[in-house]
Every structure is written in structure tokens, then in C-alpha cells.
Length: 435
Image (cartoon, rainbow, N blue to C red):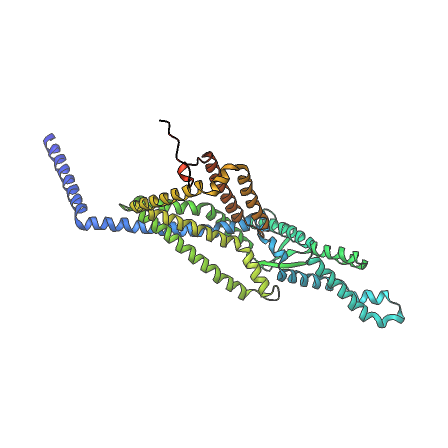
């Protein structure tokens, strides 16, 4: 019985060994190798495409999250609209309609005039109406309007965030019939104060209830809240998923991994270009669908361009970063050429440094280092002062240039005073003999 069990075990082991041998032969066959290479290549391509897509979508996802859920960034983004003529005209028209609907100028004039002067009611009412329109215009184009606009948008956005996150319904923003309405009561209060200051004390009776302007469309609050939750998740995870997918594709590449990194960078750059083109298409669609009864076409364009300016900047920055990454990756694949190019650049740099340090400018800097450093700082400060509305990139560039020039000045000064060689002086007498 034991011999039979032993023979059965041996037969089972032999069968298993034969099965493994056949499987190993199948895997080592040319067809199996091609299948493995094809599967690995396909996986690499899929991972690179997924990574590039995630990195591309990260830019609009982060921008949208910041605009929807970050009140301070939204306020900073919409602040320039307060000085846009088209937006000012739209706010002025809304304010005039609200005041005209709630202030019966003709009736007030008729009550104030005696019976024998009733024939003057029409011209006086027209004059009062003109006074109201002038006061509204002065209020909207004044510096105070910018503060009122900022405060209204801050309150509106904070309330909108509360609506979208389900935490607060607020009063500054209301959602009615899919329309998001911004409360303009502060603007009406500003106009009322100016009218009273002009002598029209009856303007104190103008109510501000119901004064609003449509700023967006929001069909389905619950659906919007769900979208906001998805948006927050996407903005948090998309960049990491994209980087992990590209890293996985690089790890699975059997050789020439730099080529996979280069392809991922170029694919991301292509995605960013398509995203920029899609933004241009979205702008045209927005302008076609926006009713001109609310905002004029130039005002609508200003609103769209202002609200999406940080998105455009993000696309541009990401595009530059991926192109730099692609360029560095391509250079790493040609180390010999890079070494030759670096050697030539170093030789040219040494020649330029020699000319600079031994030239008149180098001598002047060495003799008066404090004056040279002060001049560099003064020129940098003058550039920033004279630059019209410098951006963060401009300030950073100027600071970098100033730091680099100061580093050159420090290097020149560290050489010490220039030693004049006798053969540099034309016609110098020969050195005396000590023999």
C-alpha cells in the first residue's frame, strides 16, 4: 500500500514538472516574448496617456476649486471688473431701473408744487430724474464703488460657498429659477447718500429691497453641491495620480526610459495646447449665449477674460514647465554634445570675465565697490517704480537680475585691486639692473 502511494506521488510530481516545463517553453517561445513585450508597451502607453491627461486636467481643476471655494482669490480675481466701463454701465442701468421703480418722481413733484404751478411738474420731474441718473453715474464711477463692489462680491462669494457646501444659505446671494443674484443694496445705499447730500432728501425713502443683478446660472443646487465635492477631490488627487501613472510607465519601460519621460512631457504639452484652444471656443460660446439685456458683449468679454485670467496663466506656466522638462530630458540623452557645448560656453564665459575684470568697468567697480552696489540697487528700484503695474513675474525677474549683478560686483571686488603689469604700459622704461 505504501509503494502504491509512493508511486502515485511520484507520478503527480512528474506531471507537475512536465506542466511547468511546457509552460516555461511557451513563455520562452518567440510568440510569448512578443506577447509580453506588446502587453508591457501597451501598459506603458496607457499609463503615459493617463498621466498626461491627469496633469493637464489638474490646471483647470485647481483653478476652478480656487474660484469656487476660495473667497479671497475670487475677490482678487473680480476686483478689476469694478473699473470696467461695460460692467459699470450694467450696474448703473440696474440701479437706475430699481430707483425709478421705487421712487415716483412725478407724484412727489406734484405733491410738492402748488396748484397754480402744476404746469411745471413735467420739467421739474425730468430735472429730478436727470439728477438721480447723474448721481448714480458719479457713484458707479467713483473710487467708493470699487470698495462697495469688493465688499458685495466678498459677501456674495462667501454665501455662494455656503450654498455649494451646504453650510449656509446667506442673504447676499439668492438662487431663483437657476439664476444666481447678487444683492446690490450697498450700491443703492451709496446712491441714496449722494442724492441726499445733493439736496434731494426725499431719496431717503428709496427702499433697497429686491435690488439685485444676475451674475451666474445654477440649475440644481444639489447637483452643484455634488459637483463641488467631485471638484475638490479631483483638484487634490489629479496631480498625484498623474505623476504616479507616469512614474509607473517609466518603471515598466525596459530601456530608454528617458524617451518615455520625453513622450509624457510632450503629451502633457499637447494636452495643455488643446485646453487653451478649448478655452477660446468656450469664450465664443459664452459670448453667443450671454443675453445682451444683462451685459453688453464687450462687458461680457471683459467678465470672461477677467475670471479666466488665472486659468490662462496656469496653462502658460504648466506649458513652460513641461517644455523645460522635455528639453532637459532630451539633453540628458546627448551627454557628449552637452559636455562639448558646456565646455565652449565655459571658455566663452572665461573670456568675457577676463575682458570685464581687466577692463575699465572692472577697475572702476574694484575702486568704488559701494558706489557700484548702490547704483545696481538704485537702478533696480527705479525700474520697479517706473514700471506700470508690475506683476509678480516682473518683480521676481528684476530681483533676480539685481542679485546676479550684485554677485558679479562682489566677485570683481573679491579680486582685490588690479595689478598693472609693466608690459601693459606703453613706452615703460626697462627694469633697472641689479647685477
